[in-house]
Amino acid sequence: MLNGDNENVAGKTCASQWRLALPVLILTLVAILAIYRETAMSMVAIWARSDTFAHGFLVPVISFWMIWRVRASLAGFYPRPNYWVLVPLVGAGFVWLLGEMATVGPLSQFSLTAMVILAVPAILGMPITRRIVFPLAFLFFAVPFGEFAMPALMEWTADITVLGLRSSGIPVYREGLHFVIPSGNWSVVEACSGVRYLIASLMVGTLFAYLSYRSTKRRMIFVGISLIVPIIANWLRAYMIVMLGHLSGNKLAAGVDHLIYGWVFFGVVIMAMFWIGARWREDEAEDDLPSAVVLGNAHDRFGGSVVPIAAAVLLLSAFWPFAEWQIERNKPMEVSRIEPLAEIPGWSSAPQAMTDWVPRFENASAYLHSTYSAGDQKTGVFVAYYRNQNSERKLVTSTNALVTSDDRSWIRVSGNARQAVLDNQSLTIRTTELRGQDSTRLAVWQWYWINGHLTASDHVAKALTALNRLLGRGDDSAVIVVYAFKDSAGGPDALLERFSVEAMPKIEQALANTRSKR
Image: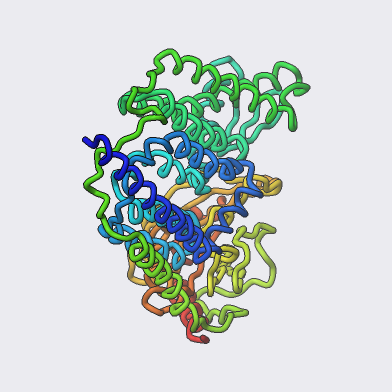
């Protein structure tokens, strides 16, 4: 404890250290954001164009406000640099590089956010950081992340909606995310997934739990409720919208109306959740109040200068963009076409396409789309080739799919996986059934070629892409899709397996020849 003149001296020393540490910290954070400006601006661009992540603009403001609330107590701590924090800072930088190599935007954005957060304990020290750990961690909500859950949420919403309709005595015919009831046709699209409600509820619920409760148990329980309630609420919302449409002859809850009704319903549910949660509110303890001043760590005032640690933070932060530049500066020339496939024994190239369906893989460097026949049997093969991938052009992304939910000509009926042996390699292949507007049905197989390696996993494809780029092998990749009519003689799976086994050596050779032209 300090008293009298010693306390005054300690207070003045503490204030003088803050006058140096705070500007250094601010300059360091600005410099980090400038070094990683492309990653930072990619986050801002998503906030601006996506309603799902528009809350990103508020997250830094809320975080700053929470720190401002406890400024009086922070003023009593001596800034004390912590060099051990440089170790996780290096790890965050390396993960950022992996994210760039694999063109996984959220990974790079999480890593940048982590570097910004880690700069605080590095320059100010752990005692201060512990005081504001939640406001700092809250910054992770600024990362536009969560859309990966959309397919699962859409599937669950369709399951529960159909179950509710059948339980209400309404007959339902379902195919994939589309279903038909006596009063009309309905589809579960991205806006019906509830991912917007989920992200908004989780962020606001986490903030509410931090401000309303002191015990970790109560906070975790409320955060869990904030995660579960919007999912269940979205199921009820979807069921109610379909029922409103059905009972009103599609005069209510049709078109944009169902989105408005959905947000009103969600708002009521969330307000009720907060009202109930407030009943168990815990008042702030006296030593948690913003006015509390702690001078008990006066012996830490000789922790060292903040300037060298700030320089180290900036040096380590700048290394990873430099490493990326070194890897990327020898990019191969663009590829404009895939080398032709050699003749496939037993198959002849057909002049006319089987159907009007084309997989939705956008911005590829080159495409190949052909039809092959063997007697009265036909198969199609589609290859999209990617080189020099970036945020605008990449193989594995949520926008690349066999069909999109807004496709009016084709819908996805079902999906599964099966084992196949291609080019002497056992591979788990994605299988999908599609239905056209004219009731044509296709059986589709899909997998990836990543610099000579075969996989059907998005995660493995991303990891292989990152590894190849780190090793200087480039990022040449392709998606391979083969398909046949569902009513093919002998069954479509047998036909596709036969074609894939016989055609894959020729496809791989064509891809290898394309890759060699660098």
